[in-house]
Length: 134
Image (cartoon, rainbow, N blue to C red; front, side):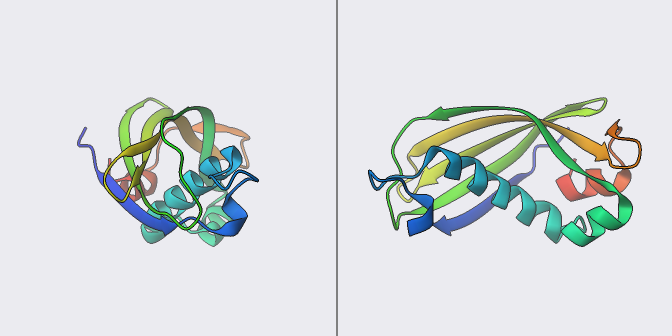
């Protein structure tokens, strides 16, 4: 499988930080999700389309490694790569990089495509594969 790499740039805002002035631990997950939505939305998996088809992405597991602090008003780049797919289960790596390229956070996600009618994971559809470029 080819590994497509997606980049998403964002500035850390006041609502993203904790009382110490660095990125709140919950904000990491929110920003990683925002980057994932940008990828699939641009490829036909918009929020409206997901609810129309009754099929959408679901995170099954996440492992975050916090390496360097990210501060208020810093610009960061989120790099997203789908690293594999076995049957109904996909694997993704996301990283937050500081402007100088320093790795600030590394995240490993396990995910799948969820059918809202069947209430279970399904094999990736052609549209889903296209959205992820896998």
